[in-house]
Length: 130
Image (tube, rainbow, N blue to C red; front, top):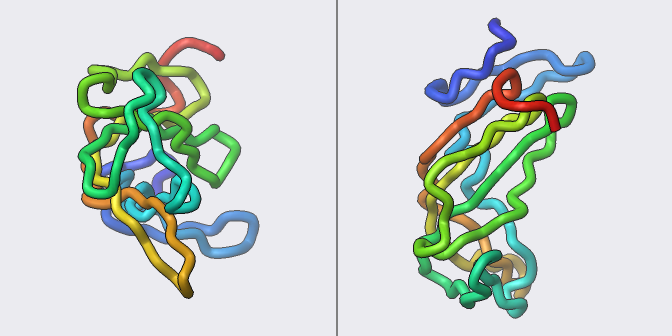
């Protein structure tokens, strides 16, 4: 299999440190991402508007080249969302759109992201050094 990410494949399996690893599309990776406890307000990073259950949002997501974990550090209301990415070398970056929801498990509520669609993609080989 190729080492180059293909954002259009649904799933593929590769060996990572002698264990199988599943590679998924950005939409699948980010669907279900948890933003913390459901009783803690989720806010736009720019205007601080409270983003409620059912709100359409946009988010910046990234994965460092040597890491397996994705991070979604910036959540935006639709009015504050960036139009494009400014690529950083060595980092896979995404700009995504989705809808906030609440996931409940054993009386524990978590704000999660659903109905995710990819708006922009930057592979780790593009952009300027950090």
